[in-house]
Length: 475
Image (tube, rainbow, N blue to C red; front, side, top):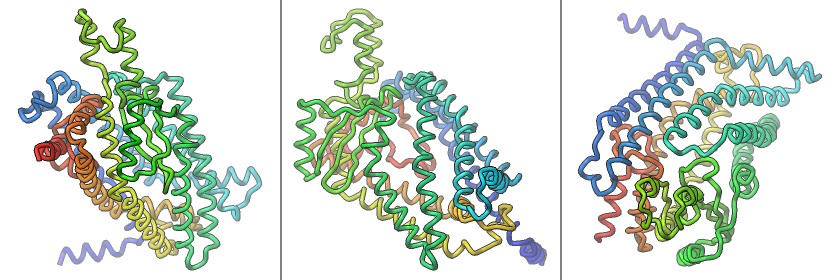
């Protein structure tokens, strides 16, 4: 009987208060779940102080300890930044930060001579202020992560001046894309009639395809230097491998990632018959600026590293971020091209667009519900941008969590398939050694809690990938 009374009492609470309470409750539930998982993984970092027997051939004890301490520091940082973010989000909701910022945007518009009928202009001012607030509150955390944690563990290559210039450039470029796209999207929703969600979805589809097409040619070069991979054995072998699987390769670039960080990466981009491959200079043993610095510091010729007698020189050579040899780079590319050949890229785009269409359809169903706006402090007006924010960010959050987990599981499956594809190209042995080197260079910790890795890892744990490749190698 008591339970029914409490349920009746719950339903007597106004709908907007129930919605607001449910959003806050879910946000904190997700936060506590993430914190629980992080603590499980942190326990692994703290207690696994010696290289487990199964990793004996893969990692030396010095690298193992370095990666353990690096991941411990990152874990501590994640805890505090996550706690701050959750408290900040909660306070913004509790004290009506969103309606306050909307009213403030309206005041700015009034000063400029734009009345309440100019909702799209007010929406753009709101977006500008919201992203500015987010950038400023995130800046101290970003500074600490770069100049304390990444610096301490030997990854950061940036000066403070470079960092600040980069941050300002990112903010300006983001506004140049965000504001025009948002204004067009809001206009389409306003004039689209009953089927506006179809037009809105088609518009976002076109925008995403255009951004993917222009990103590497026009946006990325604003931040990093891209140079064509010089003619030579590596370029020839990449072209031969691409041709063997009918990959329509047009250009191969090396990006100067070492200006920013010593972490390494590789990717491809482009549509149809116009694909390009991008390699980070930190991935390439021959091109890495970091390796050249070590050779210069030790006064050695590149090819005679083993001739140095000094212990200091030996230590530098041993500890350098070495990158991968050409055969290993080809194996890594074999894996990346496997994603293309096996249709993983297309499958991801299809899933993303189906999700986008579903979200716009549900948005169309929910946008007329005034109680959703009232829950977040909008009693007299229902601005379209605020509706997008409330529905996509808060109302869809349970769905987004489930979808994110499903995509993580799918991603791990794709990674195993791409490894198997590289094996079919005869690259199993080189991919095996490349994964070990990349793990070492990036100080990845090879031991993980099963629940943490299941929830978070988009790539399978190193040991699982190596065991799969080992069976492939033996096979």
